[in-house]
Image 1 (cartoon, rainbow, N blue to C red):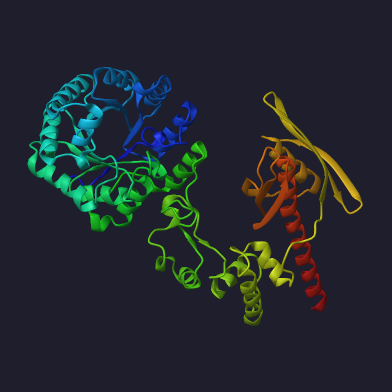
Image 2: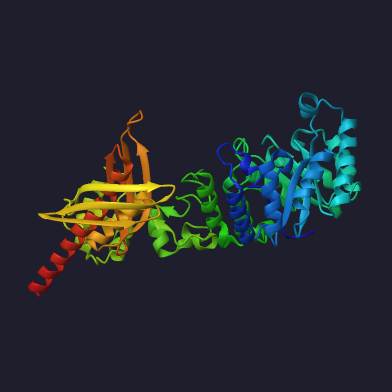
Length: 516
């Protein structure tokens, strides 16, 4: 049996059906190109009969993708199959993916058909699809709740009719891993010719078992897994591509299988999908979540500093993340604190580290996470907010569909006033560039968020920014009913924190020099 598992990505079809995850043509094409960089074997580009927009997207992707197979979904109905073929006929590697429900629940309540009618529809649809395209996949919708005897009969008929891939979905996420795996085992044991086709698993996550079920299917002979980036999809989503791929890569020796995926493209794919759909990944999401390679517990941090293998079964670099993160919080220990101070340029002797650690613990009990400016303030015996250097006096912005976003700001520094203007990609970017022109300090914005702190059309918005200056992160917050003004004040606060910290550090160095 083949040792390679084919990865069938249905982010653009099943994943896009997830509420709030729809994408336009340009966005779908961008995602398809990234999936090809990821080296997925099959990209299911959409359901062409569903709408003119879906048809156009599938057709464009079919003409664009060079390496991956491009699949189009179609019900076991002639007009669906015609529309699917019309959309993918120009692909270098086209596939028609046709399906019909096979469980008695679906036959009775949805299709209103008998098993005999479904069997006839299957044979007719697969044969017709085969006359158009050599690569035909057939799916038994709701296979995990179907009668095994009828399922075997239907699969045999689909193979005889020309299907080269047989998909047995757990459409509603009902199966347990042992049940789902047993279904594949039975199909392999009882259906003639099954060794000449690829068996495929398509699992939903209603009970949180999509990845486990997919791996159970592979263990019992499946050699294609249908999944989505970030696990998006109907209801609770589909099996997560990144979890499946990294499970196979990490435990490949035990599983005896591999994929063709370039795992270094996983994080990039996840971030792109999030930016296109606006559906953010939860922090504790396996592989790509913000906490996946973050460590706060002191024991874990100590182990990580000695050898990452103590608490990481894969490297962050293997999925395209630059490095692990030691999060400083109330559970952190001296080792992580000393390491971060060293990164900030402070080499602390043992007695100074002990003093800093005690102060750190006091602050950590009050805050969920400790940031660089907090650590610097601890060293300088000044914990808390810093005084402003620059203050925002006035701000005026112009922006629109046919106007280059421009911001004019007046800042005050003591008795001095400075006025300047700059353009940017948007009004906030223009404001930040103006601040940089006036202050002569350029920072790198690493985080920016806005949330409402009250109700109504005149709600107050809270802006949070995190910016990097000279390799150190500084936070800024501001509230305003005007988000542009709030954004400018928040960035200015972060910049002021940097300026104050820099001044204190320079003064400390001068005092040390004089003492010497």
